[in-house]
Amino acid sequence: NVQSRSLLLDALALIFSSGDDTRQLITNAFTQMKYQDFIIPDWFKNRGTSSVPRYYLCEDALELWDCLSQYVTEVVELTYDNENEVISDTELQDFCREITEYGFKGFKDACGFPSKIFNRRELAEYLTVIIFNVSVYHASVNFQTIKYYGFAPGSPSCMTMPPPLADEAITIDRILNSLPSKEISEILMLTSYNLGQFSPIEKFYLGDKSSGKGDLMDETMLVGQEQLRCIKKLGITMCELKSRIQNRNKTLEIPYDVLSPDEIPITTQT
Image (cartoon, rainbow, N blue to C red):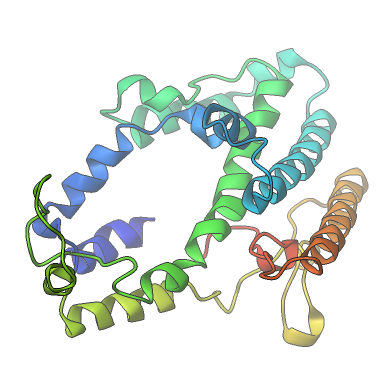
């Protein structure tokens, strides 16, 4: 994220309509951000899309949220015997305070992020929010960039003419003359392609030794046998989810495997 802010935003300013105001545009967008939006079941519910049929992003995301939430809850309960232990964990409370005081400095009410955790349920939810968004949500949008930005007329990074007026007749010439130049479009295509590639050091929820994909068991800081069993249990639930997605996709004309666990890095690398 630091690299993105210091390098990528300035580069994108060259091809975005916002130009030199790109940083301000991003800042303005973040003022609308809310902690509640990171709780994915609530996000879909608030948008009224929880029950939309054949909305596979929603279906797979909710299943992944449940898998991760169950795993995190089990680990939290292994770590803390009661609520007082959570409240008295000064390192944990300092972590939450630093996020609100420094991470969201200048934002109203720290965008709703908690400055203190009072019980194990809140902690499990908070940790699930972090894990889900740096892995599942990131995978759902980041690795699809070339599909959206690879065709300039479908999603141009900038327009070379002012927006049309309400009563202005829109012709094919008006559209073509508004599109960015070939050079700008090429930069957008190359940028989106590179941003959508997996890092060579990526670890996935489900790996594949034959293709060199690492998984949950390759690297872990949890050394206790109880915690290890939680990781293995998470791997099993991810395998079951992958099978359900594969079986569903057999019935679809266009398969949706974006959120198959073997396509989701466990953290953000690119």
